[in-house]
Structures are given as structure tokens and as C-alpha cells.
Length: 401
Image (tube, rainbow, N blue to C red):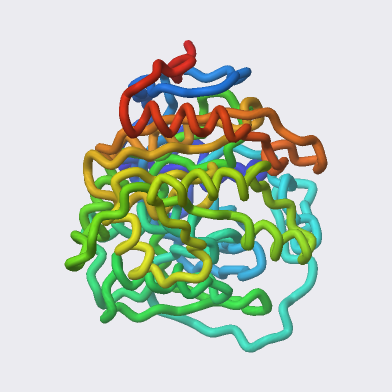
């Protein structure tokens, strides 16, 4: 048994030190797989590339744990036990106040944290539960890559269907469908809303590597997901298309998604020359979909019946899990402020052929990965022809080092 003490000055749930002075009342964890690295097979790209990418990708340790007498704080999904606080939504070492935790917690002189203000709602108590929720698990992308691996890992460790799961109450409908497809429809779900607190006598938690935003400045560490675990999730989700004709080219448009979210004040990237690219797709006999308008089942039908999928780097890559083995995927991305390593570790488990098309970003936000980027129609037409017919040679191969 490996015991660990939480580190109060990071967003990591547990440090990896072996110690023996943790109180049994606070809980314990078991490290199943230590930190390790995997090699990513190179993939072709078109256009200019200014990325510092590497063949070797780091995977964080895999562990399962149990916290006793846990209080969950829904706005941040931080967990307290006694006077100790853990942040559970990343298995990575990030500064504790890198997110908006300073409004919720007060640091004490001994390095521990306490709630600044009690939440004025009744506190519900649960005897036992699995924590799947995080600050961002209401999103389709983060639910698939962060929450579901935790669930599958805990289920493999023998946590039975009688144990409910705690989810983010702000989840999108597609997230609810995704959860049901993997955890089943008979397990009780406890959705938490931002104003709530929840007491859990025995809280089951897990981490199975990390999934961070596609920021190349993070290097090779903590920007990878576990292909083996995602492969298990894919096997639960994949179903053959139901008597549908094949779609030669499927284009995943972000135009409506980006426009709507930008009017709401969010920083959301899109592809410059998007209408011209859509015209090329349609002229080649392809089809255009906007996944935010579709249910998960409808997305599964569309992706599983496509021969070639074209999409911008973004949350819609989640639905590539539905593609049949051998599908060709063209990912449009910024040539600098995106990290293909995150996508390549995920795509490694899908047995699909991946190609990138890179273009320069259009500076507009402080957060560079969210900039629009330029994919010239001529470059896209050449890349599409190369992927569909093998008529031209790619401009390079990723990883670069």
C-alpha cells in the first residue's frame, strides 16, 4: 500500500512521495502505474510548421484513492477532509491559484486552506460515491478525456453499480448521453450545481494521466492521455453505422459554434476561409455538419459512416472515437500555438490515419491557442487531394524531434 499526503500549494491531489504519517481518517491512495512515457508514431502534415513537438510523450501516474469524510465544493469541485484540501480536476502540478480559487478559499499560515464563506444551501450527505465531476466536466471534450477514464479505472477496481457517481450539474446534453453510454443507465447520478456542497463518507477518486489544453509551452510533460484506457472507452462507444450510405468526406464546421460563443464573450477559434473550404468539400461530394446541433447518437452515425473526416483542432475531436478503424482524418490547426501531442496520444488508440494542415494564427486574444488561423483554400485542396488519392507528398512529419 502506498500512502500519500496532499500538497497544499499545488493543484495536484496527491504528491508522489511515499510517507507513513497520513491519518487513516483522511483516506489513502494506491498507485497502480508509475509515471512513464510513450512514443507517438509520426504523422504527415501540410503547410508551414513552427512547432516544437517531440516523439516522446509523458504520462502521469495512474492511481485510485478513497477520501473519508469528504466535503465537495461544487464551484471548484475541490474536496476538503478535516482541514486539508485537495483539488481533483487535474492530475497535474499546477499553481493552486491558477484558477479562480482565491475567491473560495483562504490560505492559512500552516499552508492549509479553508473556505472563505460558507455556502448558504442545505448540505446533502451521501454514504459512498465516485467523483467524476470537475470544473470543466460539463464539456463534452473534458468529460470524455478526464471523467470517463476515472470511471472505467474505478469500475475495474471493483467499485460496483450500487455506488452513485457525482457529476457536474451544468453538463451539456451530449455529456449526459456520453456518461450514460459508458456508465450505464442503472447507476444513480448525483448532479452538483455551483451553489451546492456535498458530504460524502467514502469518496472514491482516481487519476489516469492528464489532459491539459493544447499549449505547446507545456513541453512533453502532462499533455498526454492514456491510449490504453481510451481504447477501453472507445470499445464501449463504437457501433457500426446503421444501414447508412458511406459519406466520402465529412466536414465538421465550427462557424456557428464560434460565432455564438464569441457573442457571449468567450474566446473561441475558427478557420479563416471557412466558407471557401466548405465549398471545396461540397464540390467533392462531401457533407457538412455542425455537431452542436446533433445528439451524441447522431454524431456517432455521422462519424462512423465517414471515409474522410475534416475538422479544426478543438472539442469535436472527441467524436473521432466513433470513427471506424482505417478512417482518414484531416485536422486543421494553427502552426504554432497548438500542441499536436495531445491529439496524437488520443488518436493513437483509434487506429485511424491522421494528417495535419497548419496555418498561421491571427492575433486577437491574450490566449494565443484560441486565435483564428488561416488555412488557404489552395493548401487545403492540395492536402485533401493527397489524403484522398495519394497524389502529392506532405510537407513534413510530426513529431519533429
